[in-house]
Image (cartoon, rainbow, N blue to C red; front, side, top):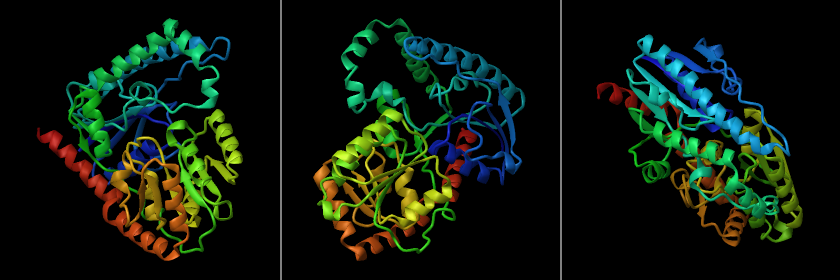
Length: 401
């Protein structure tokens, strides 16, 4: 197949997925990537593989600092309009070059990109990651928000630029998602969410994990528990800290968190919370894959408690390294962690979560048993090869239809 790929992604799980799937697709198909100079191409860099890249000029508008921060929503609104114009041009180029199919990914500014509504002469497969959660979910509250919450709410109600931007963002997102020939999602949890929010049918295409990179190193475990994710409220690290704080102090493990992005206010909040609960907290940002694998292997347990996570590659990566996971019993984690086999699924109750951590820390035999089963499960279900094969089947189904 002659496949065009469109994306405007930052670093992170979605970008890693594009890298892993594309490098495997390129073995059997002709690939051309359409993206922007401002997108992240260093993380999961496909250029050394000789895959053609066509990068278009787009730079997000400059944002203002206080006291002019309210103008930022106007700047973002302008970016939406600029992207629409550029993507209409990209769609014309793609349609003129006889591609068999366009594989589209989310945009870090629009979420569901406008190119989907402009591509009318060639089949499109959109690999959605998640809805714009700030539009459709209640965000966890934070003390640093609460100080200005009442004033902010009052101003938000009369702020014309905020209303202009979010109205356009929602309208674009809901309109663009209706146009792909087929929508793929990464979990059954997201499949249900897309039906509820957008009223569209979607198909599950599970991601994978690099089983060569993420594998047990058989070195001795160290006395800490580990978690991964951006330092933002939705990752639920505050819950982890409070839960670990309920473990008796003489058995309380240090917590290490590795992040690809951090909100400075969230970082300060978590450090203060850890101090209040007498927890040793280590935060590492922007680490290499090798360091990530090292931490998975050194940790006795991976702990993970995000809010309504679409899927969550963290449990899969940990399992591939043979490290069991204590995870929250919600969202996509229900599809990755096998309760009582590769780890534990626990309700969002701090004491129950603390008990599960302590029980597993106190039982080396069970940790070893779970760890072995975790690696086997990752090899059986979560390889990128099986994910790529599933994706190719979706492509063939779209072309046949």
